[in-house]
Amino acid sequence: MVAAVGVLLGRTSAKAADDLPKELAPYFTPPAEYADKVTPGPHLVDLGSGKTPQSKEDWAIRRSEILKTWQGFMGEWPPVLEDPKLEILETTRREDFTQHRIRLEIAPGQTGEGYLLIPDGKGPFPAVYVPFYDPETSIGLGKMPLRDFAYQLTKRGFVSLSMGAPGGDARKPVLSDGAKCQPLSYLGYLSANAWQALADRPEVDRKRIGVMGHSYGGKWAMFGSCLWEKFACAVWSDPGIVFDEARPSINYWEPGTWL
Image (cartoon, rainbow, N blue to C red; front, side, top):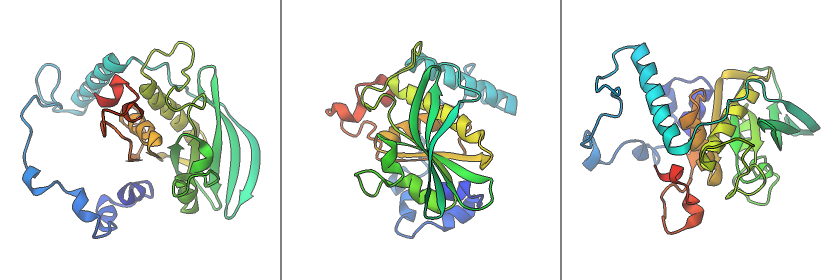
């Protein structure tokens, strides 16, 4: 998380690496037995033709090939909303930031309620989308401690957008009419729309928008960042991807989780 926060704050990668505590540094390098070893198999970066990309245009083609492959596994997204409607329902002052309870258009014909926290001062600020089971936990007003990531980030100068599971049930998220993708891929789609909503805000630097999440929010953040390239960086904690295949709450029995 230290390195990712450094990216959003505009620090160089070297500076972000220098900020790592010594006890964490070993976890950012591969174990000795795996260092400099390449697993046999096809080169995933190669084009479908077998040639290695040599230009920016080649990489654009390869990116589209990868996306097409994943869409084949999980289904295509509905069109990403260009200008999702964000309605402010209630405004509260908390400490040194403003808290807006909001209703956000998360998909065509579908809305969700959450919170937009804006720090005091002159923007535009970096921003982070923080999904979780419920939005209150992320802003420090829920029942679970030590998961108030949106609150902590806003205290450090970030605009944060917190949202919960669409429909309220994390294991059975409600998809919008016409959506034909896997539920976990759909959460990635919601992330793309959340990025759009943040990018529309005058307080936000659209070039420095990240996504982070824990547990269910970790799955959500992973799918969002991997399938929506406009996120500047991503952090996910304990997402439970093939952590224990015997537990349905880990993988939700979704093929898109473990591919």
